[in-house]
Length: 255
Image (cartoon, rainbow, N blue to C red; front, side, top):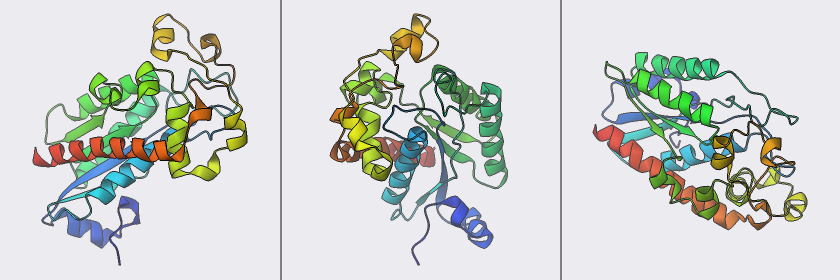
């Protein structure tokens, strides 16, 4: 039987054996949100991307005799204030998200797994700030080694293509390509093909004080160029994302 990459699919004796085993174990915690992603894509785009990245990284490390990466069940609820004008946005407060991340990671540490990487693909500023605070608090003393794959950092963003780098990528070519690669049955390709390009520099709009998608001119809850999305591009982006995560996992295991 092939060993699972999913923590929750293990039995408790298997987890016990990992606690005293020779491999360094790193847990991967996918984070997303439930919110509108255009008229063509599902509400859980961000969770799909986080889970897909974690799964690929864990599989890439599966043959490493000294290291094992396991994917935790995702946290699929997050902060979604900017999409709140649209049907389907189900968000939580930043305090709720922060407490949940801290509680899950703290419980994992208590269970003997102090190395954890948080993988988030929802870039609302409050979500990113909340995750950064949670990681800083978890690493403040003790033996915890918690990392955050922060794709908003310039060095990471530069590797993910022009649309991502320009900040005009909510349900656009970048995200739609990734979902086409991972869950193509969830994309309405007919609607996707009919969507015109819409350039909205979201970080710039947020800095100007626009507090929701409608104020940014995103009348259909998307920006970028979803009609240009392809599964081939999605697979390429997943290669980059998973390699970033593999590198971070290896760094954490060596620490």
